[in-house]
Image (tube, rainbow, N blue to C red; front, side, top):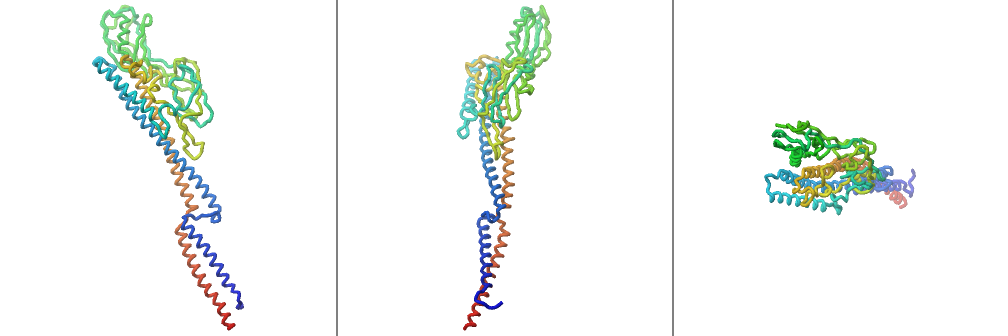
Length: 472
């Protein structure tokens, strides 16, 4: 090549130095920000994948926050119900101690009643004041709404969870088999008399009592003696023409009775014989086409995301009886457990106040055990203990439902979301984050190229100096 004023070597070297400078600036930016992709020009396809993964991670973070709040809310409800359960156990102890009042003075029984009143008041106070972020949890305001309940049909109705559907659900129940109590018959008329001293044992769901009967006592007196022990046994006796009947106050296969004649047992007319153990029958109810066997009068139905329980009232305690109610698409506590609306789930928490605990075939509600109530200690009713035990079961059931939702939906969702977040974060990091080992190596290479380019530019500039020397 000839020696000219226009030095193309210099221009080429300047171009190379400029490109190296730009690459060096890009590498420095990646190292400063920590991201390999800082603009769409860096990696268009990678930018699209990075933004998509970032959006998913944002949604998961929101879902995690929702689930952690839901977990905390349910823990508050469970903690309050734990204290309610403890108070109910104390009430049960007091009622059981007062059932056999032969060794209790009137003052002691009154003291027990006062403690029961205080415990019930504490339960209502806990129920009325347990709240989370301004929402009361146990007073029934978080229950799933229902309508169309006819009188004496669906008692103690509770909707524990609701499906994802946004329309109301009609629940139709038809009694297939009516629940019955345990029953037995003794062939002694009310006017007949015992012809010998007699001792019998009455065993029932609540306990066992040994009853001594004297020679010459009538059937009516025998009935009265058996009924005097009802608080202990749970068995009542009623006259029925030439015999008298035994029956438990409750219904279902958990109810049983028997009568054993230990001695005597001869009567002026009829037969005074043993009554073998007999049990009651559980109700069988067809709910929306599905046969459900209950626990006595209590029915538990679960299908299509709905979980419902109710007790058959007096108008729904006969075979072929039908009634219905509507579960509204409203009420309850709705939680979004995942990133999308399709992951919503609703749990209902019905009132745990004294007026709502008990019911069914227990004979009353917890509030009826307060002073002046139909089941206070002054009544010495066999149903008092049944009501308390039913209330304990109600609270235990509520805790179980809340705990099940918390463990199997909220906490499993938390675990799944955390695992997904780790995987997505790793994937985004592979695409978007700067590999500092590679970046450092590239920066050293660019520095070498820059330094060599500048040195060569100095050599190229010597050509212009040589041309000037020729002119001189």
